[in-house]
Image (cartoon, rainbow over all chains, first blue to last red; front, top):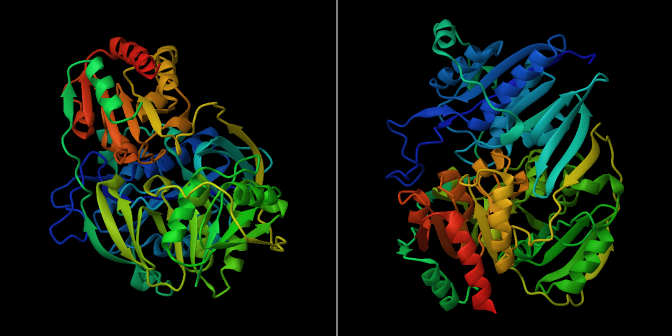
Amino acid sequence: MSAKLKILVPVKRVLDHQVKPLVNAARDGVATQGCKFSINPFDDIAVEEALRLQAAAPGAVEATHAVSIGPTKAQEVLRNCLAKGIGSAALVETGEALEPLAVAKVLAEYVRQQGFNMVILGKQAIDDDSACTGQMLAALLGWPQATNACKVALDSSNGVSVTRETDSGEETVRAPVPLVITTDLRLNQPRYVGLSKLMKVKRTKIPVLTLEKDFKDVDVKSRLQTVSVDEPATKQPGVMLKDVDELVQKLSEAKLL
Amino acid sequence: ASTLALIETNAEGKLEPSCLNLLDAAKQLNNPIVALFVGSKAAIGAQDLQDSVKCEGLSKILVAKDSSLDHYLPENVSPLLADLLKDEEYTHFVVSSSSVGKNILPRLGALIDNQPVCDVIKILGPTKFIRPIYAGNALATIECPQTKKLLSIRASAFPAVETGKLEGAEVAEVPFTLKDALPIEWVSANLTKTSRPELGSAKVIVTGGRAFKDKESFEKYMVPLADSLNAAIGATRAAVDNGLCDNSLQIGQTGKIVAPSLYIAVGVSGAVQHLAGMKDSGTIVAINNDPDAPIFKNADYGLEGDLFEIVPQLTEKINAAKA
């Protein structure tokens, strides 16, 4: 690979996947008080992939950098990335949640400022489940996109082959950098990070940028309005049956056979 | 006002089953519908639509035959859509929330500076939609005041339009030549081959979980059960990760989202992420040896016990009941 890779990994701090989200009293979101937050699991896979690309071809990767757009506490998520081996990190601090289009615009500006030529990020965040940011970022930068990656391979002629998971199986696309890649579940198994590594980065200062100062020309206003957030209808409790005969009878009665 | 609907076709150019649900959603928007087919097989899709679907309000079919649009490469399809949507007549654009739709729609959104509403499960009006968030643990009602409403539609949440013949639709070709092509190349596809009903459109789905120890036992027990019900086979993430079956069979938050009339979960514990993919199914049956498995709380009928005994019995008795 002739152009050296400068890889950006955008990461989002989300409600931990093991917490069951409950709609809040104001019905405008979910209750988060006292809940555990973690890195979006798909972004964790993106971090791992950046580290693996670097390990597999150390000469080809010039830098890995993680960025998060979120509250002050997102620094913990970034510190975790550093402990795993990501080269550097920065936080774009914002109190309000941005829509994917706004996130993509901030990231596009960041990529231009810093000169990254590859972005690897999760295919979706498990809070808003939008699955938009990677594709939007690629469009804003005028780069190709390889979404839902389950395999990424660098080749010698400056190209990246990406195998994507699709509804009907898999497909492979190939593009040179610059490129946006979004990660699917089976791309890799993220590493655990030990306490000693976490301790080492405990006091690492993470640069904090702000939308007002560092992205003042970026339009981040919301395009959609959330009218309300409601709990889905709950199902009537089911019945336990005693044997297969009873089940077949129930299914027959319901004309499901 | 009009609604432009991108209709997805398979490798042969024939309609994907999800387009029947997409068209139902398009009808609910109460605008005239313009169906769009793209790629070198676009005309086959247009013909298939006319031969097999009844859809009031669908009066025009557009075909863009350029081969750069093959395989739904978003780098090429999204600019075409951005171009078509310059027509002020179009107030809405809809596409299935499939792997193709999810790849194309956000790219289109960014090109025309518009935030799409993804994974719509209910249409409350021309500007008001419901979409699930947090793996379906909450439902957000969204108002979209943008001039264009870009929507991806979750097929399982909408009924299918009637099959039949589409009368009197006008077919027009859309000229398209790719400008400033991006250097991406579609290399190959490895499609999962199956003679079974597709997960997205199956009336009955049987799903296996990690209780199966290997691929052989998964197939030995699940295939005959599926055959007895003419069902599609699904799997949990754990089953896929353990190599029990192909990953395109995964049902859940980030896999396939399904809502068949009958869903039988075999050896499935019922993780939140799996429930997100199937909890809107009509009748849910759970078979598990753990009485505390969360799947039982989400099932209409539960059977506690050894699946290696229950499944063959069930298969046999279903076959007998049908005979």
